[in-house]
Length: 166
Image (cartoon, rainbow, N blue to C red; front, side, top):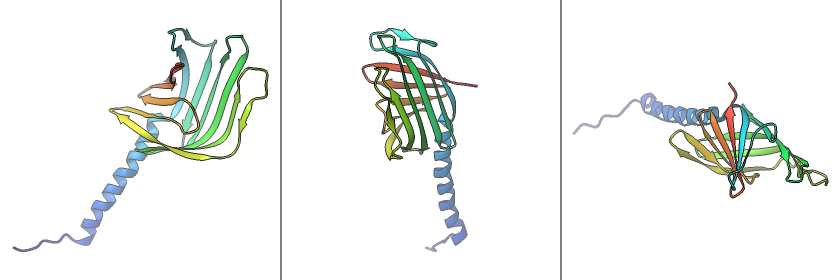
């Protein structure tokens, strides 16, 4: 039986195609979350809801730079707010973020909590059909993106519902 060898440039081409597919998969993943997202509702575990202006929020994810700003009122009527600016990378399997600035004002009259350490961490990404979900390593919430809808869930407390701004 005669052995047939592929020319090296053809055999090597398969590796190039595989690498491009893997690279474009990571780019496609990142494009799924890119854009500006507006908070439309927070639903608490007890079933009560808040909508703007009682709670407000916006997220922007673009070219590896993200920002999240959310504010509302405590049960005592005091304003609280959370803001973060970060670098991110989303691949088919991992979410990596580097926090550039994080500020959390609990609305309790004390000084806000600041983080400017520049720390980086990675967490796994899950896919269920068109749904991409992950738990950011520095936040207590879990994110899920599907089309123009997104949720941020603080387990046992609330679910925030976001819509992509078009």
